[in-house]
Length: 298
Image (cartoon, rainbow, N blue to C red):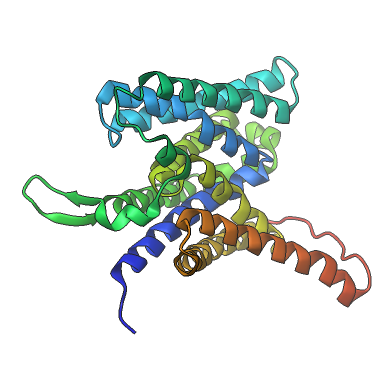
């Protein structure tokens, strides 16, 4: 059996993206804001397009800044609609992301003939092209796949962000009012989390796309939540699931000659429904009664 370098790089990159999205998704889920990640992943599209117009490049800092600003704007719009206009949270999310996503689509349609911005790449990504998209310096030094570097950098940003603000994120996720009494700026922490979600979404676009990144934000944490009720175990299990999703997703896509990103999300869905079946129906069969609900601990 020979070592397949391309398979290793794709699985490594997929794992880094799955773990980054999953860890952030844990805190989104605890705040009951999982679908806000969905809104952000769509709402950043106008920011990406505007950033592209400003810089003339898909790989510029302006694109990331534009996406981050639109992510924060989406969060403010959702909160504003919910608190000021008394609109239900699900309706606020639906209105915000459809409006901003539609604006992004219009901007692409209006100016796509001037710029090389691939809509399918933005929506679905293509991690299979990773081995040929290399980062080569001006001196000609080949540093390897650019997307792997991007995913690795984002992974360390996410880990650093969670490590530095773990206490604040935990307290504001469970009791925002209590955290405010302790002097923790809950709104600032919330915006920082949304900004990190926006950056992670943008950095994952080229690999798994705007639509599929939503699944990686939601499904692995939701699956892990079925198995554990402590925060640290939830984070660890979500990370392990991210690695398994990348491995099984790649080899199933290779076997079926299908989309790798699509298969990764399909595997995530299979893990979730399998877990729900085991923890729900099978648990009742073996125990003969409904298991008591366990409280969530830090």
